[in-house]
Image 1 (cartoon, rainbow, N blue to C red):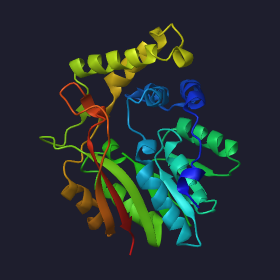
Image 2 (tube, rainbow, N blue to C red):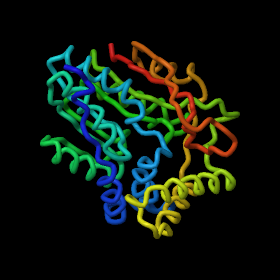
Image 3 (cartoon, rainbow, N blue to C red):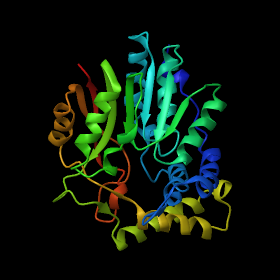
Image 4 (cartoon, rainbow, N blue to C red):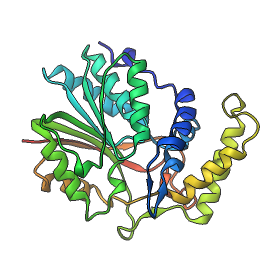
Length: 293
């Protein structure tokens, strides 16, 4: 079956306001770091305006890969490891349904908000899924997975912690199971968290506001609320860099994986520049399919 004809709809115009409302009520509020509603309540508005990258942008990698895995196995247990919203699950559904297979999906995240969004989409799609509010390093299961997938997830962990994440993924897969992930490669001077500078934050906010003004059908005319949300996002967002393709490959091989394939993915969009900050649309992304022997 043609994968394109089976693409699962991801109605961002419905998801964005739902995420904003859900985040206000359910985002975790850590002592010292505050609520993550600035992220979960803003992400899908930024996606509506094509200002950030999501799994949907890399659907040409994910969907055929999931379709091939569905067609090549009789077991279809899938773990979505970390979910800012429900975009990753959408790619899973699109790929497996192209193979006429309904996957057995579990979604984990440290915050309840994206889990609620994934359950909402699953109900909309007539699918039952499992969710667990858990740090990936704390998650356990008695039934190993056939597939683990995630997107730009390594940026939430320092270079010291990442090997533990790769080890955890290895332990959660059955022998022969596969990990699919994508991450940007940033040739930064060191491993420090990449944040918006004040100038970059201002530039990002201006671009976001101009884009929102062009969509009164979605945002209305009173954009003070959106300006505040984007400001919070730019003040808080940061990502720990994966600094080279060699570092990316080594992370999985040292955990015991065999790297089946690894490829660069370039996307059209805003070129990387000094005003881009940590959300550049023109970054080089690297995809990997790694197998637990």
